[in-house]
Each structure stands twice: as C-alpha cells, then as structure tokens.
Image (cartoon, rainbow, N blue to C red; front, side, top):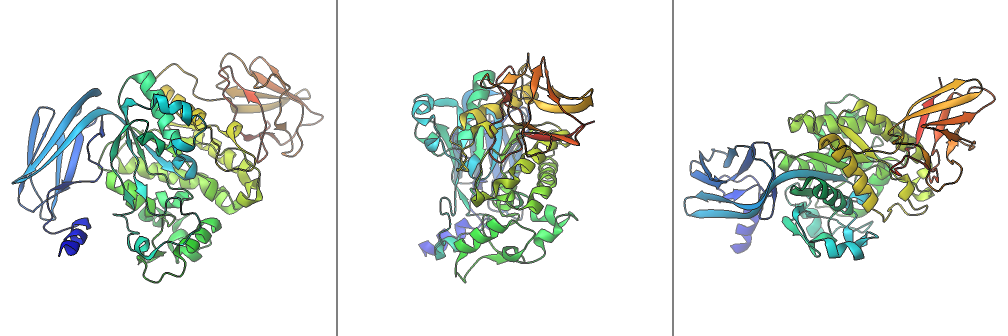
Length: 499
C-alpha cells in the first residue's frame, strides 16, 4: 500500500492531490525582482489556498484540475531572507530563506554542465565559495556521467519529463558549489561583486545534448525548415546529429520496456525532451535571462553546422515568446579551439563564425569568445573562470548598464584600397594589440595560409597583391590567433567579405 501511494504522489497531474507547490519553489531560492511574483502548485479541488508573503496574504480556490495560481506584487532586490507560507485546510508548506534578485537560466551541454570541482581554479575558489547572495538550483538528471553505458531498466522507467530532473535550491558554499556549473558560478559571482544583489542560478545543462532537445516539439514541428526533425523515429532520423543518435542508442541498448511517443523512446537527447522536462515547468516563473553554452554535438556534420544559427534563433524567439519577455537577454559562449577527428573539429571555424554572425540578428544578445582557452585534444577546457566572467561582461554592459567593454574585437568591415585590406572593429577599447606582444597571428586571405597583418591604431592592415573575396581570422579548428583589445579580450573567429 505504501508503495502504491508513493507512485501516485509522484504523478504530476492528480485528480485529488495533496497540497504542493511546483518543484521549482523551495527553501533557499531566489525570486525575480521587479516582476510580479507568481507562485503555483496543486491541491484538492474547491479547497482554499492561503499564501502569505512579504506582509501580504492572498487566497484562491483550487481549480477543478487541482491547480492553483497566486500572484504577488513585484519587489525590489532584497537580500534579507523572507518566508512564504502556504496553507490549505490542515496542510501547510513553509518556504524559508527566500531572497529577491535576478535569476539566470543556464542551459547547454557538457561545457555548461562542467562542475566547479573539475575547474582549474577550484582549490583556490572553494575558500571563497560561501556566497550568501548566490543561490543554486542544480538538479541531478537521469544518465548524468553515464557516457556510452546502457541505462538500467529502472532508469528507463523514470525517463519521463517529471522525474528526469531531481533536485532543489541550495545555499552556495564550499560543498554545494562542487557540482554547480563552473560557468554559472563565475558569472553569478561577477554580477554579485558588481551589483550587490542576490543571484539565482538554475542549471539545466545536459552533457552531450543537442540544441534540438532544448526546443519544444511544437516549435520544431511548426517550423517549415525543421519539421523534418520530428517526422520519423528520432533515433533513425538523418535530420538530427549522427553522434547524438549513436550515443542514445548505446544508452538505450536492448531495452524493450521504454517510455516513448510518436517519434520514439525518451532520452535526454531527444528533440524537445530537455524543454519538456526542464524549461516548460519553470516558464511560469519570471527570470532575468539565459546563459547558453552548446554546440559541440551540433558541429560534427556540415549540414548541422549550416542550420545551427537558425535553430538557435528559433529557440531564443520561442523562449522570449513563452516568457512574454521579448527583450530577455541571451548570452552564449562561442565554441572553443580543438583539433581532433573524434569531434570532427574541421567544421569548428565555420561553426564559431555562425555563432558570431548571430549577434547581428538577435537583439539583447552577446557572445563570449573562448578560443584562447581551448585544449587541442580535449573538448572540455578547464578554465571556466574566464568564460563565466566574459559572459558577465556582456550582462554588466547590456543588462545592468555598466560602463564596461563587453567583448573582444568583433569585425565591422574589410575594405580594399591601394594594395591593402583595412579591417575595422567594434570593441577595440583604447587600442588593439597582440596578446603575447608578438606579431599578429591568425589572419588569412584564403582560409588556409596565414598572412602578415599589422595594427595601426584601432585597425588591422594586410598588404595584398590583389583584392581577395574574403578575409579570415582564427580559421583553424585549434587556433593560436592573438588579436586582443585593451582589456585583453580576444577577437572572435570570423570570415567577412572584402569590399
């Protein structure tokens, strides 16, 4: 009998459920400042729910479908812990240590998931990890760290949207910080240092996941360009990344009792699955913005490379629409440098450039360059501190309106005149120079052979015998290109037309 009750209680839609809140509400959480505060959950239909928060008390009758929703007025940032009391008849839920600040959602794959305990500065940073203004929502997910191993039968039975992520909010200290996204932590710490407000980090990154998993099935199916990603069993669908399907088949193995739908068995890499399991359940709660670090799984075939920018824009447009925040900030990390056949990194220069070009078509966005942090044979750079801090520069500049240069040099134009190409840049700072004091590296007029380039004031000059069609920079899978601005922030990989 106890076992039956436990199973019933886990089911998200229940005709006569006990009083509960959505899973995202818990002790030690952050609520988004300057937005109406939305609290919701489930209970017994037609019963009254009383919710008390910040000196206000609201009541609502539970709907016939067991759901209830209550809104409180928006508040300014507040680092003083508050409580939320939720009562229905003889049941009571008390949520404590609630702060008001900014919530940033971290999504992506393994480089966003990459935990602090593996980050190169962790031994030093753990002594500074007691951060009372940082709160962490870092749920474990089914299949985490499994690699190519086959999932157990019990795991396959839990491979559903409700049970996939399991976790709660935590204070940020030397113990909890071990598993949090290193990129997310360093981002949060930078914002706290500069803005002195509470920051909540929600980390839903999944190692190996393609972008398709973080986009809703409905959004994909309604898009003419990408509807084919949902038209057949996803494990055999050539419109999806080959490596992703191969790894999923290894995890599923010979299992026969699988949770499935019209496009095949559930898995973290399945189109729409991470969205349904992680994004959809929190859309009712306002957030400040999104940090995105993903691409390795989508960069191994040229067809996937060529479509990625459109997929990312589709995802961003959809999230903004779903949250009803058309100006919601999205800041992403450009793929790093690597040169290995295992990841088919020959396509990485094109991929990095596609990520750069997105900046022109997506408002309220920014991109952290990471090519200088890469390892030639390892897809996981261990210096996540500079990545989190570079993302924070974008947020500080564009979201928090701080007078700070957000990025390394980004190309504006390349013009040919009198035997020279003149390249102008945005975000030069006081001047351009090389990161190591040596001659510039990384420029090319054919994408293969490097050429000499020189800095004059805030421009780069390349002497040529004739006008080339394009000029390239950092156009190698693993690049040692060394152009930086006065803040020592690296220039992005690029390929631009010479006019």
